[in-house]
Image (cartoon, rainbow, N blue to C red; front, side, top):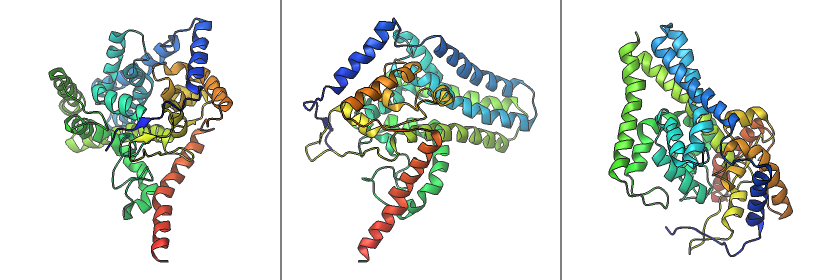
Length: 368
């Protein structure tokens, strides 16, 4: 399979103009593109809250059901750390200092995930080949079970995916911690990226995974007066909350109505320039909601994130008006759902379209 190539000769001036305007926004106001006081507050709130919840569960001496409730909240805070802290740091947008980004990226390991694998699969592959079937592994959630692209093979089971897909999103976190990182690490490549691991990459992957397993499996079983089944139920439910929260926000950015799933031609060419491709494959939701922006770490504004991944998410709301106005000026779509529920409904309809509706359409064609 050939590596897709974007048609950068077909420049409209959109991205050049947009970058100048966004750069001017920061320079004219003497504002850093990186974290500010509000971002530091969110870091302490979510990562500190995540740490505090864990310590209370382990050492608080609370009842079984109290700890179970805290485990559910811990799962939600884990997703918040991923959105609001880890994601920016791994993109290098938290700070202009690499060492500080690397330090903050450590928060990802406390969720049981690998920053190294995420940098490859998300930063490099997903951000480059967004929604391109066979290249963007982020739309390969559960091959054979969940169909998120019109190019994927359609199976009988997928007729019902709009019912069970959300359950699988909830399972994604526990599989990520126990399997996904290892699978991606040892496969030949991720998307079009053929990685070559260094010895330090092996040490970090296995070392940090072991640290997480000790903290979240061994320590609770040794310290708390619980059975293995009680621990497993709480651990599973914690990750279900974390996975469902993470999965929903990411899916609402790329698999909603009007987003495109372009395929390269036989030569591997994509008709559009990269920036225009991002505008066709990415959508925002609840852009003007303070609560959505605060909780989602700016990931409800994926248009701005994909165009400016090295800008801290704390600034997305401000520059979103610049992006929208520039897109309208150049006749380029700016996709967005006004609310979270609107985006959720749109994603649900896409699941039906790629499953039930297409199955019915193909069956009708075959019987005529």
